[in-house]
Image 1 (spheres, rainbow, N blue to C red):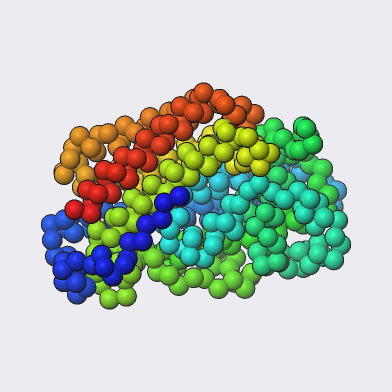
Image 2: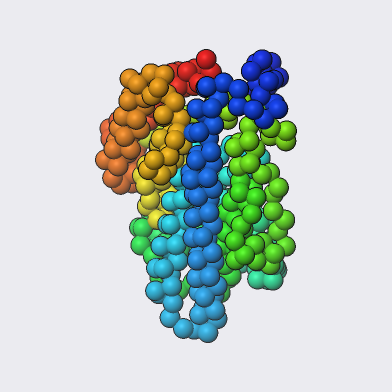
Length: 387
């Protein structure tokens, strides 16, 4: 994926230097400031807040599941409800992937919660290791977060335990249905530890952007003895040009926003869809993002919606980068908006990605549409912002 270094000293302009005093010094800067503020509050922070809210619900449900496993009570509905909460949390995460820069990358939260595929051999060994399982039961999310590798935690470890799978060709294949209420005690302990760590990470993302969280979320951090990140990333972006902000201009902030969109478009096209489509090796064949919940195409479409929210605004009436591009080049803005819609439609037409990705012409059509979106953002929108 492309990586954009937006803060190199050689890129600073005279306007940028003048702007360090906190004054919005040009018409362009004023227009981009109007776009950046709602982007931070209504797109980024709102998305992470909703994700953390869903995490609180999932955490509570996983705690109830463990309690019922221990008492022998039926918990079938809880498994279904926890799967629904997982899907809700997952949706908000996928709709955040256009802004993986900043805290998600700086603190390795992205790989921490969203690495795949799972390491089944290591997972099986863990579940049968009495000493380590006792440590997870004692330490919960702290052990999962600090002591387990990326392939044993996060969304996909929880997904495997929450959703049913059947063995096919020597590997588990998801059905999308809730897992039966027959977890072992070790699996229920492990699931709760995963949910606690996952929820903590979601709260950390919200905190790093917003600078504060609700009392309920703070209590989760306090209970887990997790120190929040003091990035104040939302403040830094909203206050471009002021002392303490990493952004010298709102132009830099806007370029970062679009660079995040370009990165996720490339990842969806080249890796998330591209690897399984080519599927010349077992590793590529198993590179299915959400194979047990069978929500991969939902994930991909939500990744493109994250671009849509970043470019157009997440709430009706939000000023956005689209407004600025429209004033400079209305035809380009129309093409970007259409490219976003075309990419979402093409992805949604794929259907059963988990079992039909290889050489599927519908997958190829979706890859092409997402690549076209990436190109117009990279070759036209980003240069327009840089003028």
